[in-house]
Length: 406
Image 1 (spheres, rainbow, N blue to C red):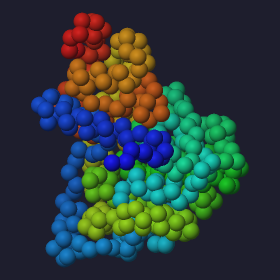
Image 2: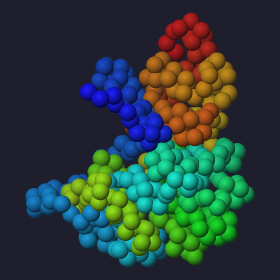
Image 3: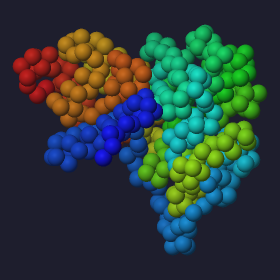
Image 4: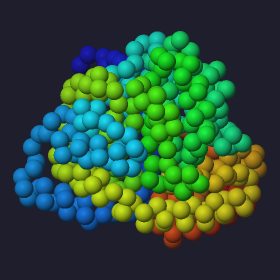
């Protein structure tokens, strides 16, 4: 057997930390460990029956063959109608590509748009896959740190300093994974003012958590506020989070026709079309509007309010309230000092091994010194996790010193 030499591309990227935490939590559960998984980035609700029934009808009707690479005409029409109805954005079906989840939408964009030497400006904390997908396209991620004091939002001044001749793309995720931050219309307008000075820069607006939000303003993305930027913006979304359809793997993108054509070409040589049955289910989801989403969002908001109050009262944690998603992102630097732990990775390891709580270290999102805690789980699990976390933070210095379980 010849010596195996992997590509340089593989060496540039790392496995998804969030998926790794989820997989490890499941493995430990299978071994009989009492694990409370606050690492998973998926709703704990079941997919609504209306959506499941649409998939069952499609199966019974024999809708189990290949579809067009870019999605069925019916689903693409539903996407166009969704954008018009909910976002006041008017696309044609030639401007829409349906993909195997939101991750593939961003992957297609990076492969179609980026070359070696190009730069992509990404505010941190960021969704774990942005930077690695940029690296897979031979481009360079330019990470712009933000802090809890800033509300985890990039300022116009920081954006202006990061943009350059080599910049090809700016990535904006609101509501944000992992922080739950939502940009206001005024903040989006200020960023738009900066972007107008760099007409060569494209914009990726990741709106995946659009419907899981409770800020003071209705949801808006940057092109709602700055419609003149539409011709260089790609809007990314999907059904995974809003409709509890993570496993169905349907995302979609809308943008300039030539860019969508190029992204479709990339997809034609990777996955080809998304699963036919999943597309039928996604069409039903989008045509249902937001009726199915409202009760789930209300449950997430109630959990958020309770969990934020609990975390804010714990020793060593600083936690700002979220404006959406189903995550909180407490700063843990003081807790690390109290516990004598080196970093957030060590804290996540200690939590998992000593308390059975699975959480994702903030360094996975480009922001060391934080933890991402998902409250997309039952109230019972949340309450037990909070009790264990409080005991750990209060008792762990003594327990760690003696090798005990906190």
